[in-house]
Image 1 (tube, helix red, strand yellow):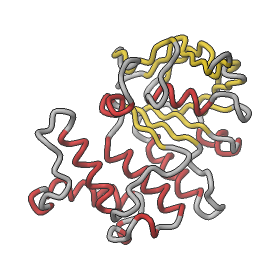
Image 2 (cartoon, rainbow, N blue to C red):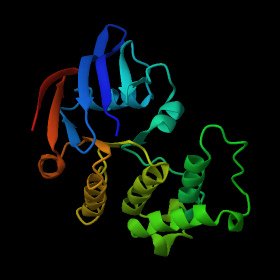
Image 3 (spheres, helix red, strand yellow):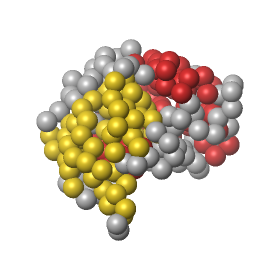
Length: 234
């Protein structure tokens, strides 16, 4: 079980400081919600942690390992799993193909001999079984042969959570996971996050504007305003 930590994490865009020396520690077994008004720096802070943006100064570490100089792909391998405001999937592949590729990437790791995406899957029974298990857990097993591009938005968001689960990260990062979802779709994603919370070895970060969701799911809330950490507590 590894804790995530940022120390004096800062990014400047010209003369504008979008995230200002944010120091925070996130422990396994807790869900932390990050809230604040539009433009507060919440998604930018996420981007700095996951490596989509390079910090002007400060550090990001996981389990005592400094990740600050690593690109996003290496941070994913180190244990950071990130879901975006917009879905980040392979739209022209099927639901099953999306998940099994993520499972294979996780199992083969960074020192794989070469990732053969189109190998005969009968030779990879364990990978297929793990993909089936994940799809069953998110109630998409009956749509495994559907092209992702044809899925409704709610199912695409569920599938993105499935890809994170396949990567088996230490940290789950959700950036407005119910964005664009209707009242019937949103509870499905929230129930998936509740299930993830049951694993006390995992750390979960959540950026969310809906305060009813925050109050229900969060063990802790931190507040950003103008890029600065202004409050932190239960």
